[in-house]
Image (cartoon, rainbow, N blue to C red; front, side, top):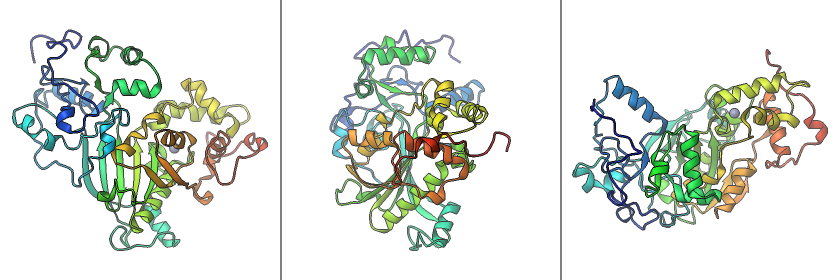
Length: 413
Ligand SMILES: [Zn+2]
């Protein structure tokens, strides 16, 4: 352990000493590398550090003596399994503000600096995989999906390319997206994280922040090299994490059925020569977290009159203070990263997601609603509430009388 503590509020470098970051520059080298390693404080040109919330586990590993504080990763053979970009959108400093478009290419674009000993790390990794979900077998049995022996095998295996993306926030761009002052954004981030990152307020010259939050995973179906070609048809589901439903099949919401339905549509599109894309955001419980979510479930089931659509959002607001903290304003960034300007089939009912895409200049051709048969009985409250609040549904809005009716299981059933 070092004998003295280095406070980031009293840094050893002054403005202008680090390698500059020119966000939106036409090439990675002109943009400059992001250096957020804690082992080279004199080179750091970003606030925060790598791996989001997992940086705390890294700290624990160092504290426990399992990891050397100055460990530098050996990045041999870690380059993307499939190339992505560069696309013209990467050169627009306002188009992508919540991830580093060059983040998967760091070992290639900055090989010379890494070789010279600078600790530069990728913030995006791209690999290949096979996935399989029981819903796909059901879709094949029902004749909705037909195996082709390549993208979809008869045993339900699906070939995918997947990308893991850590958030990288360009603070002036984030502030602009929300129509607030950068100084107010920085001060609030500092205060609301209990002063976790002093450089937010002491180093206004450092514009990039790696926030300690979850990132996203992309699952791509079909030929990824066709992305960026305007002729390529795209099917897409943007899915915000719901561990209870996505993994454990909990029946109070429609998350896993919607995810499986989105994957089905993506496979179909890939089989027709297009590209399917599932964006999986780590924004559990509308980014309120699972503890808040379960508190709301209890409040919904215990309230006078039972769980019903007309009070669905109010119960969330009672506990969390807001209905939703997912901020779809940042969601379109990933489409700019993939060079996508048009989505031909959009598997989502959310008016917020749809509105954010359209505001970002991405055309949505067809909105695909989830088939009614795939909605669990206990999730009826959620579906009715969302449609009444403006979510897209081909059946139209339910009547007010319908929203008053308690539906689904009781708390102890
Ligand atoms: Zn859910």
